[in-house]
Image (cartoon, rainbow, N blue to C red; front, top):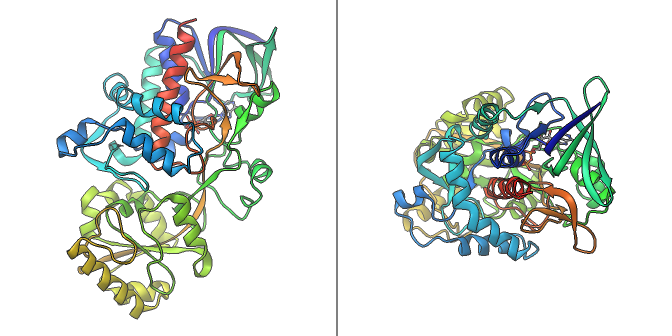
Amino acid sequence: SDQHYDVVVVGSGGAGFSAAIEAKEAGKSVVLIEKMPAVGGNTLISGAEMNVPNNWVQKKLGIKGDSPEKMAEDTIKGGDKLGNPHMIQVMTEHALDAATWLKDDIKVEFLDDQLFQFGGHSYKRALIPKGHTGQEVITKFKAKADKLDIPIKLNTTAKELVKEDDKVTAVKAENKDGDTITYHAKDGVILTTGGFGSNVDMRKKYNAKMDESYMSTVTEGSTGDGIVMAEAIGADLTNMENIQTYPICNPKTGVISLLADTRFDGAILVNQEGNRFVEELERRDVISNAILKQTGGYTYQIWNDKINDISGTMSVHEAEYNELKKQKLITKADTLEEAAAFFDIDVNNLKETVKKVNDYAKTGKDKDFNHRGKLVSLEEGPYYIEKAAPSVHHTMGGLVINDKTEVLDKEGKPIPGLYAAGELTGVIHGSNRLGGNAITDIIVFGRIAGQEVGKK
Ligand code: ADP
């Protein structure tokens, strides 16, 4: 069957909702199609922290000196200069406006007195949504889309882009019953299908190292469909070999550990021998690679209540804590001896390591790994110690887009009628995405996509 709209948006993560809402508010008829039985994609299960230079919480906390230029510098450096500087600048310059839109128009609640400083960032600049997850963002997006009467077609998988006279004019999709529906798009198709972290064959095609030995943190919908569909009609791809592992995940299931966000407030990482081996606020790739070189290819993260109390991380992720406890991947212990015994860690080394950290916390100078945030004294128990390993998290590569989110062909020319935003694009993060930069990327460029098609 055939359905007719001005704009067809494929994929209902943060990028898709941003695009659909902007296009609708520009007066277009819009449909959002989603292959899973529920909306949200990886945005839903992520921590959804969003880097925003000069944000209102920085002002409140008295953090001065941050700017879009500084965030751009961090982003370029964090991706080994493989990101496109112009596109990065567009992202950082639009970040505050995008966050303000989320807060005021979409009604996303952010904590008003806390920020995260993720690895590779020179400032505390990541806004934290209520509950520290994407649940808050997606719930509010869904409510807004409902209010605007944007139809959302669940269990509907886009299969193919239809091109007529060089212009993309429709998407062929399949519903749960196997029926094909052609969604015609008078003004444009916006692809927001996310990355390909859960498509092992596609991972291996572009990077042989990222094989089935890695589990992944992402949802099963992240199979690179948008990238494959666009490539089939001539789109250019970039950075495809750059696949990021997240360092601190459940070693049995691959699921990301948000509980372990205590790392941003001073938790330390040790190996089976009880020694630190990397700066805890290093880039994700650096920490992941360092972990894989340790005995068994895993790490232990250690913190106490003093560290937990800084952001209250454990109370917002209580369900994860209980699950990890059941799986014997975390323990709470009154003493370091007890903690070490639970995981059979060398207790003397561990005590020596913690003694040094306590000294560094006092002097403010980490003589071993030059921790760029603040180490916190671990003198006082009880201790929490969690076992973790890296898992595939984000695919940096994807479609080449310009600053209007038009998808470019191999000659650098826009493919008429085709737009893309979010993880399926490959121009921002280079070799390595910094924490908190995905939400900024997907919201900024998702909005631009909706606005651009809205001008047609
Ligand atoms: P982003 O962060 O870029 O917004 P997400 O992973 O949050 O990406 O969202 C992407 C969404 O796209 C997911 O909900 C996923 O299930 C959906 N999706 C992926 N492939 C298809 C497809 N072929 N048809 C429809 N939806 C898709």
